[in-house]
Length: 227
Image (tube, rainbow, N blue to C red):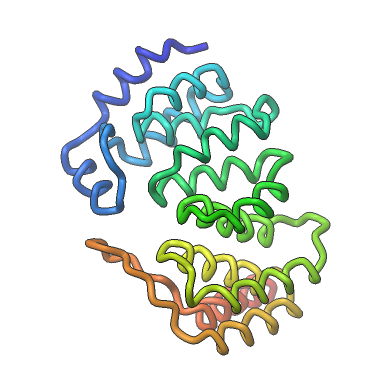
């Protein structure tokens, strides 16, 4: 295992005040160093896999360290209980995206998606719907019926869901719409019935994409590549 103290010191040296301001606008709270994702990705490639280091970095409570932890953690050594413990610490959508990408590499993707989408916490539910998007993007054996049921849930609940959950539901709908032609039709129809999805992105320039237009662009790019 790499020395956690040395890695934390390296992260601190990489951090900048400007990045801390940017991350704060995106809802990230202290403690954080403000390390760019380019540096985090590079360091993650250098250190992984190192699950013991990942555990130590997560335990530090530092945002940048936790992003790096998810980059170096070993999916084969991560149990469901550890994933649940880490997920309980989620407090911003930057970390949610990293958590979902990691969980998708474990055997617990489907179980976590099932449980977290029904969670009353905004962050856990957001992570759950981000996992549904990961399911839609994966080339596994989940049938269309599963995703049709997910579309029904999105259509029924998105209007009253918490702010970030709405954004992640919309993302899941888009991902489902890109899975195959049949689900494209279903997702497009659901998006048309839902109408605009309003999400408060705070002091950022981020926007929640308009689902129908986004799905159409995905398929147009796909058709162009296959032409």
